[in-house]
Length: 398
Picture 1: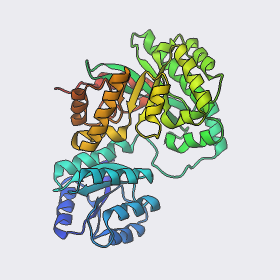
Picture 2: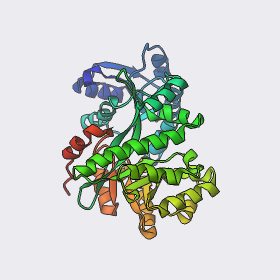
Picture 3: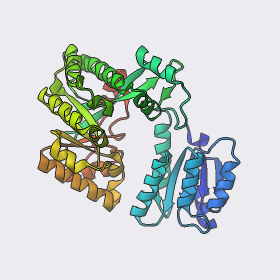
Picture 4: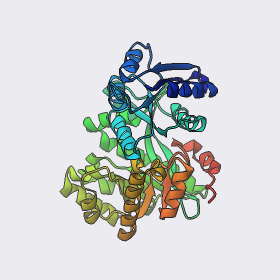
């Protein structure tokens, strides 16, 4: 989508600031614009639109209805595809508002500190264009359970791969396999739309098996051509309650000539505690067989420290919500520093998710993080496109 095709709304109570934003949008070639003089006015305008605008720029500190309440309504009523928080307030407050919007399921492109400039605005809007073509928009599932089950059986749900890079030498050393539903009409369905449905219907075990099998098939080919990469695969909570999973995973990887030592199974914090006794037993058996174990989205669950002391994890993945923009947000940086320190003391490999800017890369490198994953390095791509993505990667200059 080009800038001229974007539709953007500016919600700002100060007329002068609003005119500046509109002028900057015009300079960027964005002609389809809406404006709101405060939160209530913005909602009135948005509710009259036939289709939601692509991006809404929202000031927080406004009389009447403030920007926080306005964003809440935008998210719950699905009045926009994405929002940008614009304010000169405390970064910690801005981060809280962004987290709130994401919890409602609204895409958040980030925050822009006042005064607004063309460079700041362009960089933020580029995040929308960067993500616009990868996946289907957020929304309601437009498919039936039977269609989803058929897609899983027919191989339409496949792994895409996102590269992981060592900070020390800048080399791509691994990939994470991420489920994507490639429908026959060429559309791509977001995993957040179909994975929860599979979990509810008891099909998560089958999804894990299919992802592991297909990902190992790709890895076998890369290994054959001399591109030896570690492979990370997500494991569902349901799989941890299945006593046969350890033997089955071993059989799957070895059927493709892949060693368990080259496979890292990613476990979310909450999944282990759903059935602690079975989960701990299965994870212990997986380590016994040589699989690596990663605690995924570290810091977002309630039992992180307890699990780190009980489970033989080999890797800690810092959640992207803490990593993205941490170079400019002291509280996020503090969480990242503490996580890295904990990983070092426990002898775990530290992986930072959500690395999207040179500034965050440099900060993580200085703090001694081991591995980076994020859009700065490469987006998730089909297996056939991975080598091209890797070849385009260039380590940021120090």
